[in-house]
Length: 252
Length: 253
Ligand SMILES: Nc1ncnc2c1ncn2[C@@H]1O[C@H](COP(=O)(O)OP(=O)(O)O)[C@@H](O)[C@H]1O
Ligand SMILES: [Mg+2]
Image (cartoon, rainbow over all chains, first blue to last red; front, side, top):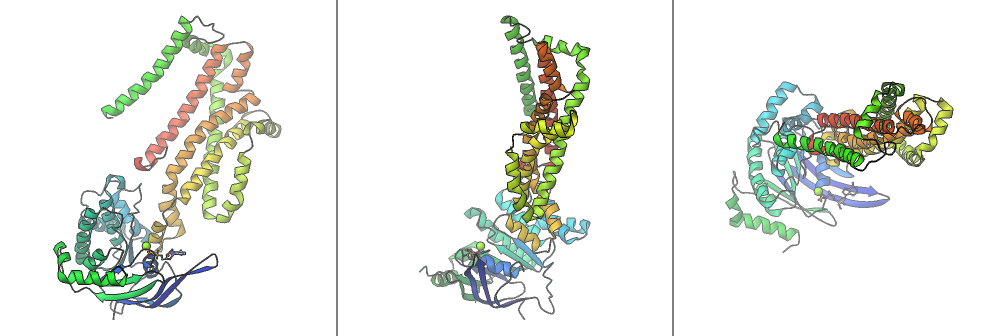
C-alpha cells in the first residue's frame, strides 16, 4: 500500500461570501521514500494541497490517508516543513533554530543536540552551529531550515518552493544537495515547485496541476537513474518529460 | 573593545567636551552676564549651595521619571500582550487608547493634583500617561509581526498557543518593544518635569521655578543638566538592556 493516498480531494476557500475552488479532484499516491514533485503555475493550489497534507487545512471532499500498517504515521510528530523563506528565528543561533521543533515536541535535549549537529553536517553546515542567521547566506539559511525540518525525524517532509527565492546557481546546487540529503535520510518528500526542469530533475514522480479551474492534470513516474546528475538534463528522456509537462500547462 | 569602537567612544566624548569648551568661550569672550548665561564653572559651583538640596531634588525627580517609566513599561507591554491574546479586546480598546492619547497630557496635570494632591504621585502619573502609549503601540505591532508560514510550521507539529507566544511572538516582539521603550524614555523625562512645573514641592523642576525668582541662572542651568543626565542614564540602561537581549541584526532604530 502507498504511504500517502490522496483520493478525489477538493478544496474550496470561502471568503466574504465568495467561493473559490482551489483544488479539485486531486488523486495520487506517494510511495514511502518517494520524492514527489508537485508542479504547476502559481495560484494552482500547490500550497493548499501541501497544507492539507500537513493537517493545517480541512478539505471539502475526498480522502487523505497517510501511513500504513508497517509504517504508521502520527500527524502530530511526523511532519517536517520547509518554505520558500528559511523562516529562521533571528535571535537564535543556527543550532538552536534547528532545535525548535524538538523543543516544541519536548524531545530530550542532549540527544536532540547531537542529532542537530549531525543534521547540520548532513546539510553542509558543519561549523555554523553557533552563528546567527544573519551571518549566513540565503542558501545556507535554507540548508539550516532543512535540518530543522528533519530534527524530529518525521516520516514526511513537505517543501513549498524551498529554492524559489535563491539565485539560479545556488538553486542548482541545492537541488543536488537535496537529492543527496533525501537519499541519505530516506524520507518521503513532497516538493512543490513551479519549475518544470526542477520537478523532473528531482522527482521520482511528478504530479502536474493546472490553473483555473484548478485541477490535477497528470501524475507520472520519472524513470531516470539515481543518483541524478546535472548532465541528465540534456538527455533525450529528460526532454521528453519536460515537454510532456509544458504541453499540459499549455505552453507549447 | 576594538580600535574602531574605541575611536567612536573617543569622538563621542570629544564632541561633548567641545560643546563645554564652546560654551565657556562664548560666555567669557562675549562677556555674557551671569544671570543670562553662566559659565560652565559657575554652573558647577551652583552645586555647592546647600540651600538648594540638590541631592533630595535629584532623588525626587529621578524617582518620578523611573517610577512613571517603569509603570509605562509594565502596563504598556501587559496591555499589548492582552491585545494579542484577545483580539476583541484590541478591537474595543485600541481606538479608545488612540483617542485618549490625543489628550494633551499637560492638561491632566491640574486634575491629577486635585485627585492625588501635590507630590510625587501626580508627577509619576503624568510621566506614565505620556510615555506608555508608544510602548503599547510598538509592542502590539511586534507581537503581530509573525510570519504566518512559521506559525504553520510549528502548528504542524502541534505547538500550543503558549509555546508560540513564548518561543516566537515575544522574542520576535522584543526589538519593537525596545523601539517603543526608547521613545518612551525621552517622553517620561519630559512628563515628570512638566508635572513638577505644574505643582510640586520638590524635584529639579520645582527647584528651577524657585531659583527663577532670584535669577540664579547658574542653578537653573545645573538643574537642566542634571535632568538631562537622569534621562541619559535611563536611556543608557534601556540601550544596554537592548544590547543584552536583542541580537544585533534584529535591532530597530
Ligand atoms: N486562505 C485563502 N483564502 C482564500 N483563497 C485562498 C487562500 N489561500 C489561497 N487561496 C487561493 O487559492 C488559490 C491557490 O492558492 P495556492 O494553494 O497558494 O496556490 P500555489 O501555491 O499553487 O501558488 C489561489 O488562487 C489563491 O488566491
Ligand atoms: Mg504556493
